[in-house]
Length: 194
Image (cartoon, rainbow, N blue to C red; front, side, top):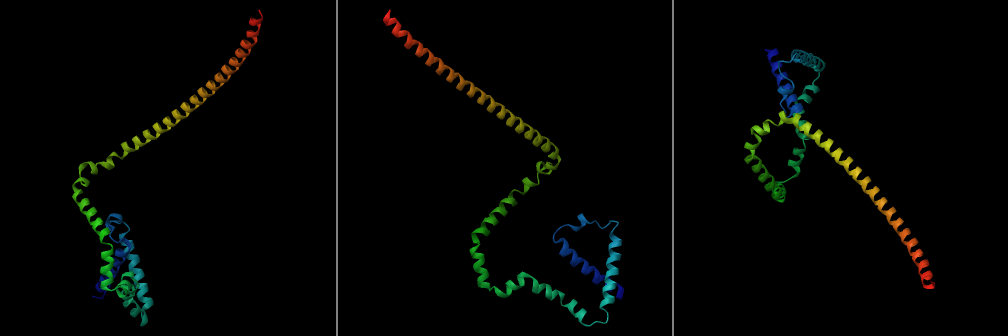
């Protein structure tokens, strides 16, 4: 009878520990019950529990401290101090001050609930199956971006070459125009002398 009582106590403590560690997460998905580590873990926990029991046997203050652990947890909880320091009127004012935000969040939640059918559709459920194709498309897009960047660089270098050729031709035409103008000026006085 005492052994089953200890097992019940141990199971309750394990459940409270699991609640603290896992929270709302699905612990059975992460650590299935049919795992090979199951009995080993339980044996280890049982050994630890017996060692703790043996270490605390004969000491009167330690069991009292264990009994008060739940009280200590509640005192350390931030919501406990909030309950002591915040009056109902203050809580009401805080809620009224956040009314717009709360209404906005409620509207978003209603919108999400109305779109629940869309989220449960076959297209969304098939999305993980399309991850490979999406990866291929993203690789193709990266390759095309690299090609476009290379094309832009080539076009820029062609435009720079074109601009330098046009500048050189303009300078050459200016020089030829100056030479031609000097030749025309030099030729005009000869005609008037003839």
